[in-house]
Figure 1: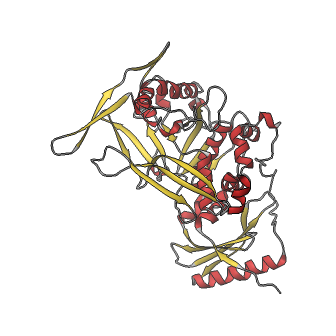
Figure 2 (figure 1 turned 45 degrees about the vertical axis):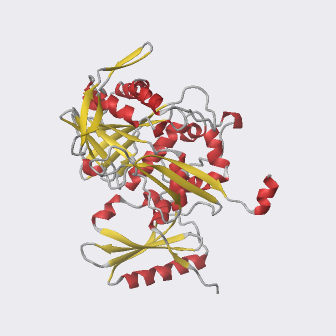
Figure 3 (figure 1 turned 120 degrees about the vertical axis):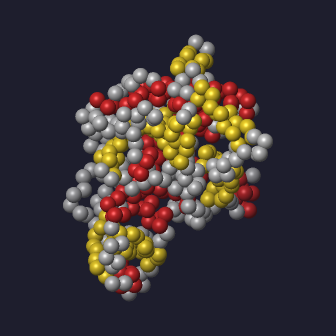
Length: 460
């Protein structure tokens, strides 16, 4: 008889594997305190404490016919965590010895999205999809994305094709939003074609529609625009507000508030900038200026205190194009409750989250560098940071996400539904922000492939 090895799991790994199998309802009456798995992770276990009765529950999980980890057995009302753990050890051992790896539950429909098997000829595949699906450098991203797919509902029926071809950036953004909303512990309603997400909690419902600033022209890999700080600032004044304005105005014309399942509820547009390589490192300021129709000058007074002064923006002009500034103050925009934005909804994010959840190969090293908010009230510049990504890191999907609230919203978004992110409000012509302890503005991830001396000689 072979001994069954049962390992204690890191919460990040457990969460990455079970995805949406964890019901948001559980947080109201239990708290997870221990996570376990057999060596092949065919059977998982979790110990929970009942926060009201102070007793313990153990839940056994295995993959169903679609590949989702789901409850296959449980025991409640145990007096100690040790007894809950002992029960799990016995059950995981028995299941492992039995050799069963799929635990059908009888209610499975369809199958998991096979997102990495090409459905089009190679010449039609997006260059970044080819990198993501094949290169050793992105094995961590592939691992964590595969675990999401059994739970992901393809409302449009074309997610895979879009993800692999012309819609790669937009679909990555949607997949990132999905991961964040799951992490935030929200209930999903995916029964409708549009908007993209209907989420619920605490008696509130919010509709979220995803969009991007798309790329014009063909993608050129490994080319990055070289710009001075002055050139970037110039682009944020007019060019980028116009770029953000186009998809936001298009979504405004959809009039989602007239849909029966959306009427009377907050509507949020979630936007990301993919218009050029690494563009999201510097374009967020342009979005803020455009949404509220102001930019902020700053100086230090005689006592060294930071003083911020708002300056109104009337319009943005680029060549023959001219648009009014202040999206939130345009006719009809009162129906849009807020705009969400992140500079982190990229494949690099999936690679880092996968690496820290244990999906990466040991020879692939990820080094992250970026800028984060400095909570010193007199700081006018962000803090810089750098670290190597490993399983000790604690990055979240929420990190770097912003919600810009519309001061004219007919139905404001309750902040308590999205407690992990930065919230920005417009009060007395000033933008006032409630920021989490760690708020990253932007970052870059360097990928290093560590090889042996012999491999290096062969490459040379």
